[in-house]
Length: 128
Image (cartoon, rainbow, N blue to C red):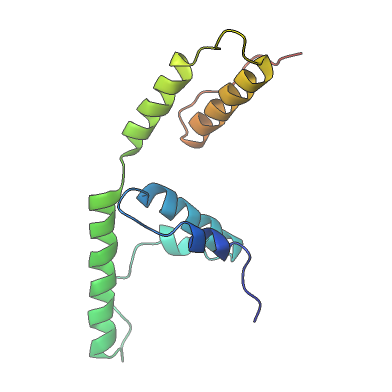
């Protein structure tokens, strides 16, 4: 069985107390590559099918409580991320003597980040 090349993302960016949002995004990338991203979007079942063992029921409750606790404790609210990104975007000024190209790349990366956050910021004018 060949190993998914994207699992390297998960191996190098292991979960710690400060990177929950990045970790869950990386998890989504890997699962989407395997066409299994629905696992994160679909709610956990409230009941198991008939014939499930007591161990499976205990494991389901454990998984449910672990995922909820991780989200409550470690998730950074999107509102905070949007605020920090918007603040960086509007407060970004080109340093005197610096490259216009590097400033442009930085601004474009911030616009892309804002678009990823679905803030509704779109570029209406094109640079020609």
